[in-house]
Amino acid sequence: MSQVVHTDDVTWALLEALFGLEMVEGDRIFSDMAQELPPLGAIERDSVDQARREIEYFSQFGLEASGALVLLALSPLLKLAGYYSAPYEVQTQKIASTMVPEGNLEFRGLIPIQVCRGEEWVVTIAAGGEELSASLPQMITWMLARPDHSQPGWGLLTNGLTFQVLSLEGQTVNLSPLWQLGEDLPKVAQLLKGISPFQPPQYSELLVGAA
Image 1 (spheres, rainbow, N blue to C red):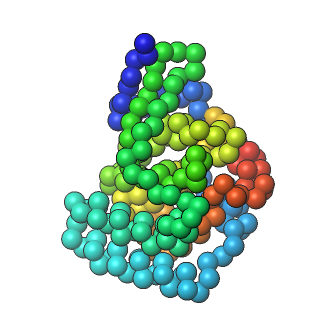
Image 2 (image 1 turned 90 degrees about the vertical axis):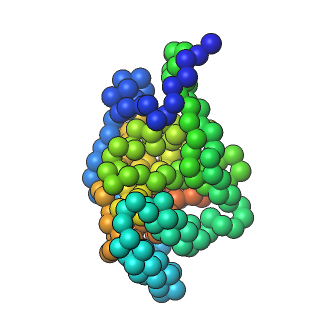
């Protein structure tokens, strides 16, 4: 019988040791990808700008309401990306289970928000605290549980004001800079709209080139 470890208790050092992961930080891969993605249209930009104004207004009541801020931030972005329509499904509290290679250790936890297309995982989303880095090991563990490792895994961490995008391909974790609510929100919207099982080949090629 395998030993079960909750994803809350996973650390980066443990993931690095057990899975041989390497973290690559920087904006290049995401900037290159943004140039390949279709730009947002005028109506889409207006929608993102309206979401920004609403989040900025609500944020004055303090980060203790970050759960509500996250909902405010994500709802228009997921709608803009088309994830509220077929063939996508937005699931909550999805069980994620990851077995350690050549071991009897299992990491298990509940993913707060998971966008799926059938059995394919499109993007894993979670709310982080004021310091998003504290939630990175848990997010990476969930991404390791995706059923199809032939495609990049995608993750988004946010507290409603700050956003961080992750991609996982092979043993490489690409980590975006911390994107802020203001001028960076269109980047988040554009990326969410672009990452799907229908990615053109150059997206995967960019990720491999960054490893």
